Image 1 (cartoon, rainbow, N blue to C red):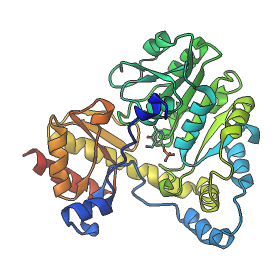
Image 2 (cartoon, rainbow, N blue to C red):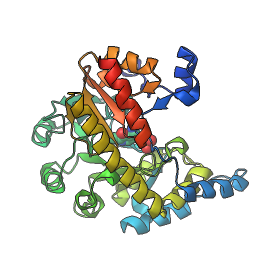
Image 3 (spheres, rainbow, N blue to C red):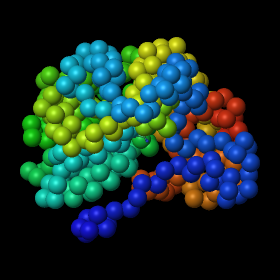
Length: 357
Ligand code: PMP
């Protein structure tokens, strides 16, 4: 195996509820997991019904026609511009395989989503980590970091795990300056949690910037993380390259059907958004009461300062509360909590007060 593969470390997911239950002997029902930015409302009822209907088709290979048509209509793009992924992580990986190789480099921001370095290094590329500005992407510094061998710039907007956000005009200004042979990937996993007026329709920029790729997921506000489905929107030529390296049938029948139904479930989306807004207020107020510093949230999670995060995390786990340590993101003094239902948020705040006392 090449040295760049042996140098990788595997992605560390949030601790599963069943694992904490086994480790500490806490009943599963007494554990709350606010660690993986999942939708606390579950999945949309329409998506659930679609999954149940689809159970009758599992002897057949998947057909992605309907979902691609629905996405083409939603984004006003031809079907040729859409690439489906087994989660948007799969799309990120396809991009790394299409554009990166040993001898190339990829630019990303310090404290940005962990799959960017992972996918880049897996492809043998060199990684250029650019220091963050106010925990977010410093686009001027990222532009300056681009080298002749750079082929990809990764941008998460909003970013995970810091929750920071870049406005549309900043991104367009950046796209105008990036060389045309560098792909700019804007990962919008949390776009739907922005207030409607701030939500970005970056797909409208694709015609002007054929080096732009936009990634979206059904794992967050659509509540389908366990089904693994996301997509990329790109220039048709780029999408064609991605489809050449994509595994046939990378998205399964249940995921495809659920995604089509979830796309049309406006009621569930509105409810998910409202629960998140209320939860952000609740947790922000609670953190303020506890004298904790936190980064203003633009997604479905809040990242807050505790000092000895490993110790505080351990005390939360003992109380059956799973949040996410982010030392792996270069933030060893911070924890990230996903917005939950009101009672879960309250329980988290009580447990945190205990853990800090
Ligand atoms: N991008 C960002 C910024 C994320 O936080 C996540 C989920 N943690 C993903 C992509 C991947 O989501 P999925 O593979 O479930 O679509």
